[in-house]
Length: 398
Image 1 (cartoon, rainbow, N blue to C red):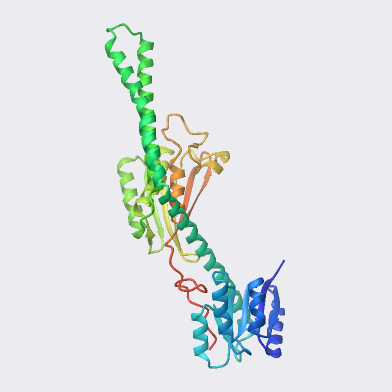
Image 2 (image 1 turned 45 degrees about the vertical axis):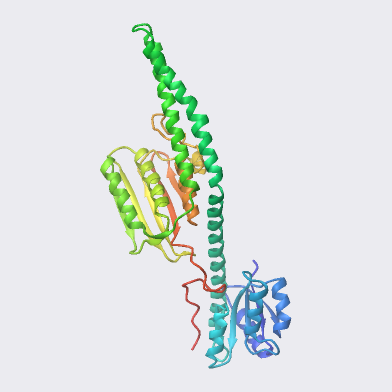
């Protein structure tokens, strides 16, 4: 197993030896220590093969440790490794400047212990990893939103084609069947012929409804998000109360935590909720329970809210689980009498991912399903490339 790679930049042999001994005595983590005696020596090595963390002394011959950090920010923005600055006793101003320049922590040489050193290096690496994960999630969400905007022109063309080329012939079929039935003398048609004409009319109307549904889903997916401050608890309460008024099911809402606000698109999340709650009702028997749970997850890589919708319905066969969020896919155990187009969950996944979130399902056939949505509260700007916005740095040793 490869260890965490540390590059120590310090011109003091005694300090380099002390750090090496502190890392070698670590029984929980494995460290790979490399050293450099100047910022000028360290700079090209870091650019060519960035270590996991740089432990750098501020007072160096030539370029200072702070100068090295600023040079790295200039040359490899977005790829600067974690940095912990070593300072002299009482030099708080240097420490503050180092943190502002992007260092994750600083240590006072005369007072840190071996344990404090190891904890500082590990925390610095974890902070940079979380920062990059947050940046990656924001970039993916921004790319998805840009793609949605660019697809608006294609959407308009699709809508025009679908309305004219698909619905037009269906309307002609339905109208001609109805006209034929009215024009033929009473008693001319047999019962079987009358039934077949009725089937043609119903099938044409059903196909027209499906086209309308597909267009609505496509239209909603391609709209860019309009983020605003939203209380998800209030939205869930509203949708659950609306479902209680029309469904013959029992609804139970649990909440773990007090703050369920975030920067989300209200209409998009309303469509997600309508789909999940609607499916819970559609695929479970009247009188059963639909459980909705909200929970805050501040300890995850990004502060996020979890939403779960559980039912006691037919469940999803194991073979269908990998395909449940694919367009036009319906479970193999779904009765033909249960209406549906197989696009609702695909649309829900799209809207959740536009928010930078995730959705997955846990289900057992015959025992019900639980859909789990995780939504980051937002995509905040980073205060600096070395720290997560709003996340306090590792506190220095007095």
